[in-house]
Length: 179
Figure 1 (cartoon, rainbow, N blue to C red):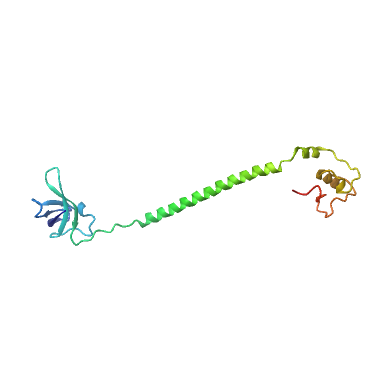
Figure 2 (figure 1 turned 60 degrees about the vertical axis):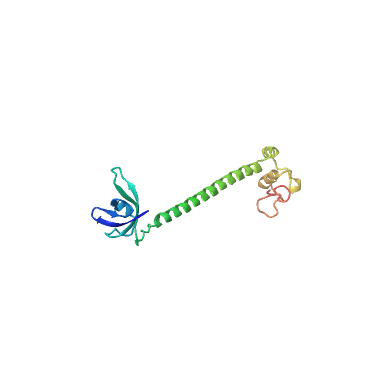
């Protein structure tokens, strides 16, 4: 890196020339090489710079800085940072909700299949339902052969003693246990 002094500066056009004992001729400097500095250069400023030879054979100053002048603070894009945090949280919540939804859907469908298999009626029960019952004077649960027969007697036959608590379910201890 070379050191030189700003010999001339055209603020309106944004360029000037640096003279340095380390380089033979004056070096062209453009404002774009100093855009990271807090202020524009002034005649007499000490400039640190690298040199690049241009196509026309002239030298140009690059990677420049002004002695004693601070660099511009890069404005942190706080809004962008906050937006990306918000977006990250939103995506995380969406993924968690989707996982919960899928899990519940899977477990509910599995439970429904299990419940259907548990509640499927055995074949012999189906045949009993299709049997024709008739009132034959039976009054007690010990005389019944199934819950269906007890229900038939409770609904259709007189003088039955098969619903002791009068809740509409006959023979709860023996035939119609509810399990």
